[in-house]
Image (tube, rainbow, N blue to C red; front, side):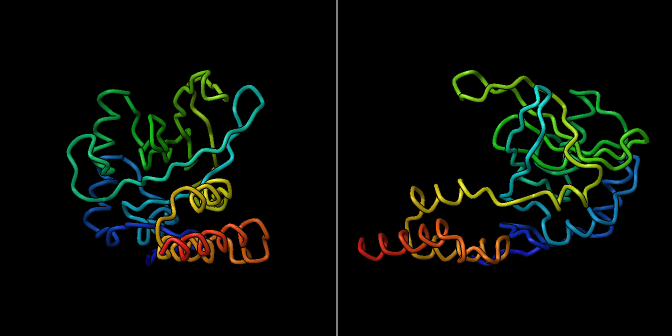
Length: 214
């Protein structure tokens, strides 16, 4: 797999960088200018899968690992189609989203990441975190959380979830190419991973298992 690289992030499935016209369309509908850090990010991650987690403080004093992996794209959009324009139109209609607040990504469920460019938000990154039921073992109520004071800070806070990587190597790797993709992912996001005995051991074990299975 050939990831697109942005700083310490390995990004999968990104579209080409947005055109100036696409960005201008988003800004007109949004009623605000996109920050340079977000514009730069979109050159590498437009519509891409960004499999990194952020440690988010919850209202009850606990914290939770959140992953908003699926970033929207700058293509022409209509409604709820994982484009910035389409998701913004839906948020305006259903959630009465104010001017200057842009949905930018989602997790695998009902949680959404926003870039708040309103005068009150001043460029912060916030998330609507959907409820988790008791049976998950880590229940929570739905809430809006401030994750970073800027998009730049949000990117800096993103990190690899080691437990997810270990689980993928043990449960999901079906070929040597899958293991090689994991190695590439770690080389970008965690360059010293070979010095981590648990990660290095899991990669070696996955290679050995797949080689034995032919």
